[in-house]
Length: 364
Ligand code: GTP
Image (cartoon, rainbow, N blue to C red; front, side):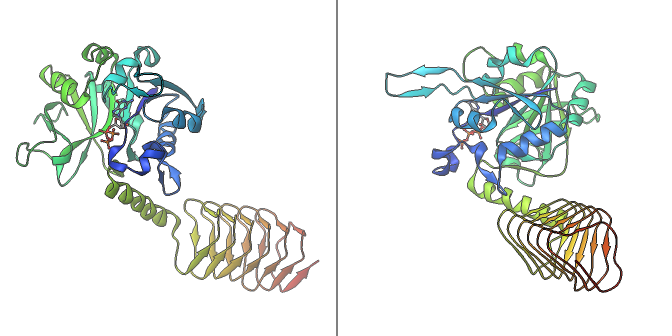
């Protein structure tokens, strides 16, 4: 499956930070927005991504390179208009023009198009599946919001077919009888290229979708979950907070917890209360650390439990290790997978421990 990401907008509403970086490299919870999108596409089985670039194209290309998250990355750059020797500007093609421009790169199979400034955990594979089953020219991912007036709003046929009978971009209050809005993600059939003019500005929302509605060729796909357009500064802040909330839920951090620099806590891990993690500590999936001090550089592998212990610098705890109360582990020690050190066990520096110990003891 192929996807095109619209990633050429100027991001004027995020100035002045967008004067020095494209919107897609804005960090969301310390990870560039584009990586959130690419990672989710890769999980959905996308193999090739076309980045439709324009403003600050070079910065984006320098970051993404030729492949990312196992997917091939291609670039399609909006046409360049030369305005003299010293000044260059790019023609804005809008949300439809870049799709037409990339026609040859997208091939002759159905493909996805995404606004690049959306943060979502939408299941792209499911969207594509629904699109193919309906047989329309386009299927728009639809998200339910309280106030639809800032978005493109879709009204659906009453027969349950998910056919869109009306699409209104930024409607006035009361103009539409729906709160399902265009989430900025579409599955498209190659027939779409017949609806977009060549080499000029075209708005998918204002020009293409209304025509498809008139021909009964536009469908919707409703979804719940995480979705936010980071285009405005309030929403950029909100997106960070939404991710922090979901990370907190996934990782179950219980205060008080103090973490150093570059600490990684994987999904499902529980950290706290009363835990100090030094710099560069890694806590693996479903691991648990409570009432402990963990020195810098420690690796705690998946499903390990550390409770009431002191773990020295650069110690490596294998998978499903248990370190109990009052244990103290010397720097650089290696505790192998599945080992339990029940309580009051001291381990000398750089010692390798491959058998469990259930009584108070010093391992030399
Ligand atoms: P503002 O200037 O703040 O309105 O942001 P924007 O320019 O990004 O516009 P908007 O949020 O409406 O764009 C929706 C999506 O289309 C974003 O992912 C943009 O990057 C992308 N986009 C908008 N215009 C163009 C364009 O002319 N070329 C390309 N390649 N992408 C575009």
